[in-house]
Length: 60
Image (cartoon, rainbow, N blue to C red):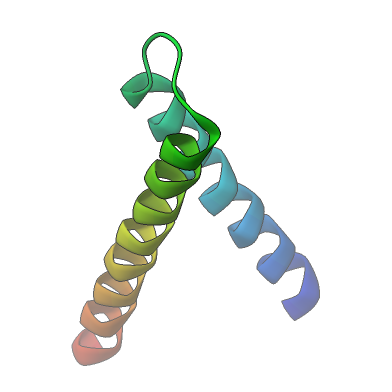
C-alpha cells in the first residue's frame, strides 16, 4: 500500500514538473538551459510539497 502511494506521488510530481517545463519552454533551447530549468522546477516542486506536508503535520 505504501509503495503504491509513493509511486503515485512520484508520478504526480513528475507530471507536474513536466507540465510546467513544457509551458515555460518556448522555442529552441540548449540542453544545458533545459536541464537547468528542469532542476529549478524540481527543487521548487519539492519545496512546495515539503511546505504542504509541514502544514499538514501541524494541523494534526
